[in-house]
Length: 208
Image (cartoon, rainbow, N blue to C red; front, side):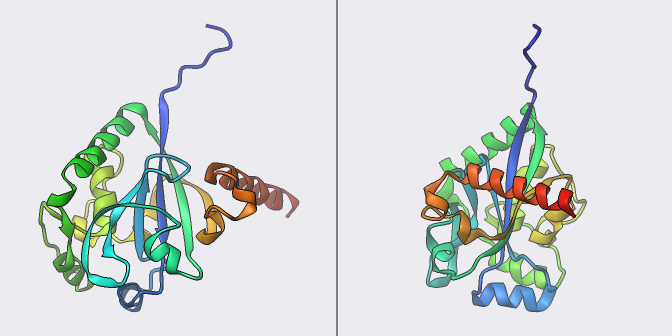
């Protein structure tokens, strides 16, 4: 029908950050990667953002699958939160598969734990496999791979947050993610602040 367009695409959002925790500093010391944590969001407002990380903000030794929020946990404790948000365009079918996978994690969240062994092996560049243990980047990659979105052709525990920068994706925010937390810019939704950031960046690029 004229004036109507069939929508057959959807978007996933990968959030890469680097906090000032001991583990984050250790990863940075070994890899020199700009970002040391990865999360995956099903929506642009980051209200459906998931990853693996600390169960308790002050205890680095107990980790789990978790629903993350920029205004909670380690994100909240950080004075500055350098990060980047990637928007990945995917077919609706693949998006549905990714959502279904995440819903399975939510339904069985007590079954999954943080992959401490995978972290240590990863720092030594050694592969290891556990179906119920995940690193943050391993989880993001697992969802992308199993839903047919990405294949890095590398053992999952060796995938690092920085690897996602090589995806065919649009950077829709780069800078201090604390600026996206409610309370900044008059409390506008995150998607509005992301739109303003992209528009400002495009204007700057054209002016240059």
